Image (cartoon, rainbow, N blue to C red):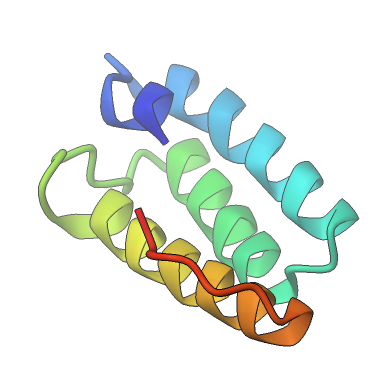
Length: 82
């Protein structure tokens, strides 16, 4: 997430979204993988918002927190979400 927030251009962000897509798919986080695939495509078409406190990165961080809560609930882990 930090690498995406700090990306200087869509090519850098595309590489990061691609990595996130693969990792989240491997862990079975389908919504995150689908979102990352959409963001990767936005990078290709230069339509990604690289705004650090809004836009696509903020939506990803929110979805990521939701996924973390769901996984912790599924596994019976009590923790505070970062």
